[in-house]
Length: 76
Image 1 (tube, rainbow, N blue to C red):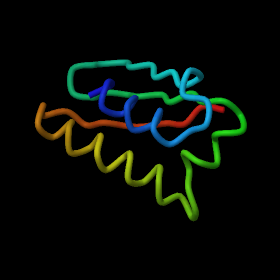
Image 2: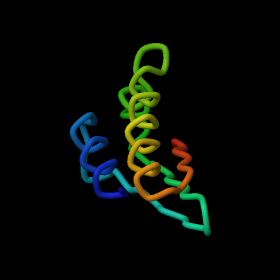
Image 3: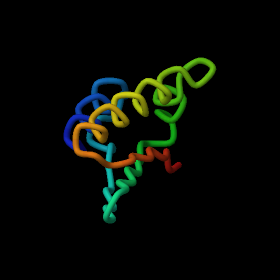
Image 4: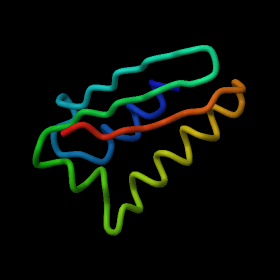
């Protein structure tokens, strides 16, 4: 799951080498923290938050396949 979100994030930004995703797992939850370069934060959020919502929906769908709840946070 982390790899899929990382591929999506790297495709959206100008500085793909600055994309870092941390993953924390518990019994029924997965937390993904996306870190990008400061100038790329707006590209990940998107107009009215549409891009980050889409990323969260993809992660949620992948999590349902594993039977886990997924949270995606953007760290600046």
